[in-house]
Image (cartoon, rainbow, N blue to C red):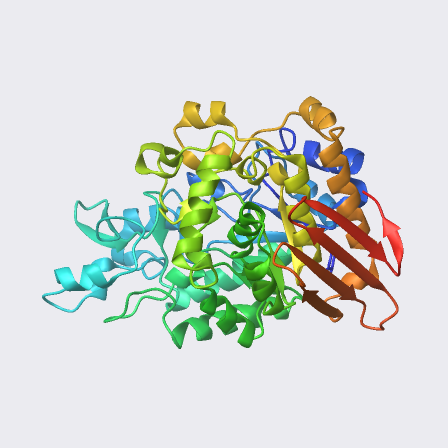
Length: 480
């Protein structure tokens, strides 16, 4: 299916039921027209990071189902799949062939050699300090070959995720064939996970290296465009990088919105929200929650340092069962710039405030992505968190079929499903339509969405002092 401006659900294959067949059944039974697209988080065989260390893109993990199950979803929903352009599992056939055959392996150049990257006498401590790292050490890992020799390969993320050399001919062919494979099975959008780490260049920080990063993105977009798909580059960084992506006509993420909305609802001050949404592009996907934490780095200079601190402190004060330690090394959190919590619990498990947060997202410029826990207004899963000691699992609850059937009856979830069904059907939210946000007092704001032909107007009025709202379409009140 083609990309549509309809709410996109973000889910794992085994989070709304046990597998893809359950997911399809639950969508048809409980979510109906509220969902228009699905970002199906990595469903390939994988050896770590909840699917983000893929072993083989040509297969569906048998625990989830088969390609027929994926394609069945694509018959009703437009689909987004992840492609980890920076790395692949060290359990992949490519890595194992390299291990066995070393220089004789056809995949010798697929992986980026740390040892060959650096000139003689380098890297120095200054070289390593310059790298934009996800670890407190050099991003490398030793590979020991069958003949007993060894060398180091680049290893930016987890132990299982070995970096690819995206400049090598063999890697370019691997990228092309993998993208074709994903599109063949129904992908409308390819999400380029961690793409900003893919280009490594001497005397840079090896993160979002220009102009080479644009050459890489253009190459990938050209490949998928031949098959009628588009790419969504994924990056958590200063908002100006997202704006560069917009200037290059790529879809982007609004990863700043979660903290801006929290600040707005905590402070009951609409000033920053009005400023941010007024400057937001239409060609983007909005989020309040994802499979990772709430990004703090994304909102720098949109909120002041004092406002970020206020929001962070309020989150731990107001948020239900949210503790600072859940976002630390004690709970295996790789990213100190993210806070681990469900969005519902970040707002104190408060139905009224939570629904207003989703109203803001529904009316914001772009296409809303809603994480499955957020669609069910899910609370922090402390049991799973403590069982696994994995901070991000606080927001990765596994819903059984029976639990879903219960949760969709809660008034706040009923209202959410009505909201997104309304948004999916209304012409007012067309991407080539008009967006306006105004305010007459700091504790209130109005948003107006108008269709491209000017015939359909949807208006949202929010009073932050009382956490009340009103929605009208062409003057008629809409109730959820």
